[in-house]
Every structure is written in C-alpha cells, then in structure tokens.
Image (cartoon, rainbow, N blue to C red; front, side):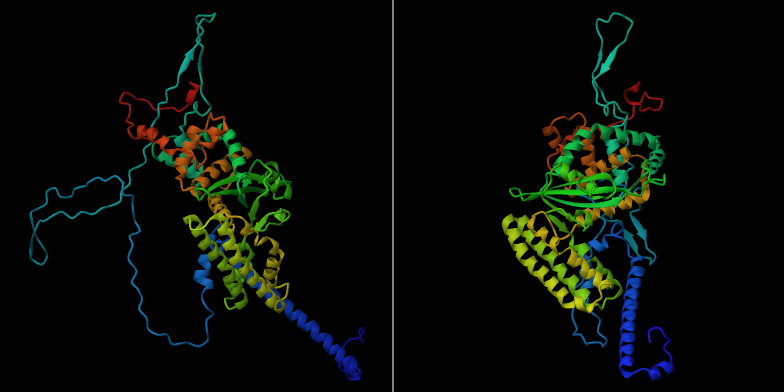
Length: 551
C-alpha cells in the first residue's frame, strides 16, 4: 500500500493488521509534528519577547540576580480563586530627602531682607510684626574654574661654544611636560569621555561655550601623548593583573575604522577584552581589584589565551561560558548565564513551575556567598573557614538543582526552550562549582558584565575609535577609571595622579606607588590649592596660546 494513494476503497480492502499499523504510523507522525509545532511556537514567543528585553550590555537586569528574584521570581503563581487575607498594619515609611551635599560644602548667605517692613498686614486684615528670619538652604552651582598654570622648568644655555652668536639652550623635560596641557585637563577629558560618556566633539563645544578654544584633534593628541609616556606603567599594570589570585573575563564589541575586514570596510570583529584581577589579603582582609581592558581582534582561542600564556597565569578564571575557554583547567562559569534561559522563559510564561523552582534554588547560592563573605570581611571567620562553609552549603544547593533536572528532563523535548536550558546546565556542570575553590570568586561574573555595560553605554555616543593606537589609549584610561571605581577612589583624582606622577617613572617601586591601594592622592592637594588661588594677570591683554615647549 506504500506506493498507492490511500482511498476509501483501499482502506475497505485493507486487512485489519495493516490498517492498525497504518493508524499507528499516522498517529506517531501527527504526534511528532504537534510536538515540533509546540517547540517552534515556544521558541517564537521567546524570540519575540527578547526583542523587547534590553541586552546585558544595555541594562543590568539579567545580571542583578537577587533583585530579579525579589521582584519577579519570588512571586507565587497566581491562583484562579481569591483568598481572604487577615487585616494587617502597614508601617509608614520615613521620608528621606534625596537631595544631599557633604557637610564640608562651602556656604554663602544671600539676603532678601533689605527694605523689609517691621509690620505687614495680611489678606485677612491681621497685622503681623517681623520676627527672626526664615532661613532656607538651596543648592547652587559655581561654573567650573579653568585656569592657566605657569610651569617653571630649569633651562640651560651652552657655554664656550665656538660661534659666540649661537644661542643653544636645552630643557630636561618629559614629552608630557613639554605639552600645553596639564595632567588635570587630560584627566578631565578622559573621565568626561569614558565615565560621563561625552565624546570629544561635545567636550570641544563645552569648552567653546566657556570661552576656550580647544579643538578635539588637539585634545586627542594630548591624550595619546600621555598614553605613550605611560606605556612602561601599562606593562607593569598588566603584569600585576595577571599575577592576581583570581580573574574574571568578558568581551564587548568596539569598532576601529583603520582596521579593515575582508570586504574593505571597518572590521566588525574588534572587541574590548575586559579582565578583572582580584587578590584577597588574608592579613588586612581587603581585596585588591585591578581592571584591565585590551583591544583584540576576534575571539579565537589563541587570542583569548595569548596573555594568559605570556604571563603564565594558572589560577581560577571566571567567564560567561564562551566555548573558547572550556579547555582551561580551573575554569569557572557564571551562574547568571547558566540560568538565563530559564529566566527568559519566565518572562513569557510565569506559570512554568519547573523554571521558577530552578531559578529560585540557584538564587540561594548568592545568599550563601553574601552571608559567608560578610563574616569573612568582618573577621568573624578566616579564609579557610569561609571556603569550607560556603562549599558545604553551596554543594547541597547545586546537587539539589541537578536532582530537579533529572526529575523533569524527560518531560521536555531537547529541541524546546526548556530542553535547551536544561542542556546548557548539563554542558557546563563541571565548571559551575569551580568558583567555590577561590576566596575572591562569587557565583557570577557580574563585575565584568557591568563594566561591559558601562563601556557599551559610552560606545553609543562615540561609536568607534579611529586607530588601534586610539583604541589602546582608550582601553588604558578606561582601565584606570574602572579600577578607581572598584577601589573606592574618585576616578578624576586617580587618573590625574597617574598622569601627574607617572611620566618619568622607570622602576617597579615607582610604578607600584601608582597602584590604587598604594597611591598617595594627598600629593595633589598643593597643586589644586594653587589653582583655587589663581587670579587673572592684570597686565595680559592678548589671548593665551597653548603650544607647549615648541616656542
């Protein structure tokens, strides 16, 4: 019957055994097609929902695990019928004034009392006499102060030259000292670009509005010159990152116009390679955190492991699960990425109890880590006790998660959204508990993801770098800014200090003094006091030209 059409006459003449086999065969085909249709519908709904969900680089939603679980995933599945709830009292929240200023903020008085009468008559005809003044504090802004620094350097003139009329002079200056830009201006430009997300053309407009002509080409040139003078420190900084006890890595795209792809257009294969190196000091109970950004072309395994091999790094490494890292021996995979597909499923189907229970169970890992880490940092327990306590509690949770998967995996097709989410957890199972071996490691790679998010926010404004040198300079100054933020320092202070004291340093001791946990920012105090006391030159009638030592 396989080569004939199925008609009523054929069915009528078909033996009962063949008819039963045909019905069974058709039923299996229909069931398989229905299952495939259901999987495709599920994946379609998921993809459609993802269009309206910001990516990880645009919003930290997918990487703020505890916040999500407290708001969305802790809510119980809605019941069909309503249930009476006993009356309860709700506490009134204390109103907090969100507008604040430090206690040492300068204060000035503005009086509106001149010519005020001792008596006034209100609309109701009642006469009021003047009493003590009403004082209202208001926040005010003083436009930023831009000054001209006059740097005095020793200059030497040649003696006993053969030609008496020859005027030969020398200056013993670094390249940055010979520029027409001070470290404070360069620090302000790079912090404005990479932390405030202001591209150079906008900064040029701001300077022009304030009465200063500083073209963006000159600003970029000054930044590149400081970068080149700090290259020895950059090499030392990278060595310190790769000597850390723990590292996290991530990548985010960046376009460099001078790097061309096969089509002759700017390559789309450029990335900022984000590395965070952390080392916990058991004596001080503090963690030194260094952030390093590098420009790389592509994410091939050789590229990803180039510096790891060069600096012989062999400790723990946390990533988002990129397959290129899988051969690494002490590889940790981020739990946020491990359950991300379950959370995406819950965005379109909040009644999926299996996905809900898995994500809620994984959330316990974050609570365990935070509770143990707070005891470690307070000195209640030592590092070895921290590791033992966290591992004991976390291993029970991880075993429970995979026990749940074993119970439900038979209920879902491997081709469906739940099947793929379960498959991801199965694939990365050997790497999801490795973080428990390192004091510095947490269950997630959130720190790197947040830096990628901040970089992507700025990238939307300045879009691209012109050259590889520009990308490398951007990566270095962005590293300083993010390192300062993770170390609790003001990025402007730290970048200015590195640009002020870094050029000319040649020894490891000098470079070490520039690291965030070593640098003495108080040394900037005297320099800044001079700027605050600056006054215009009363005899100056012409505009200043910042040409450095070229004239």
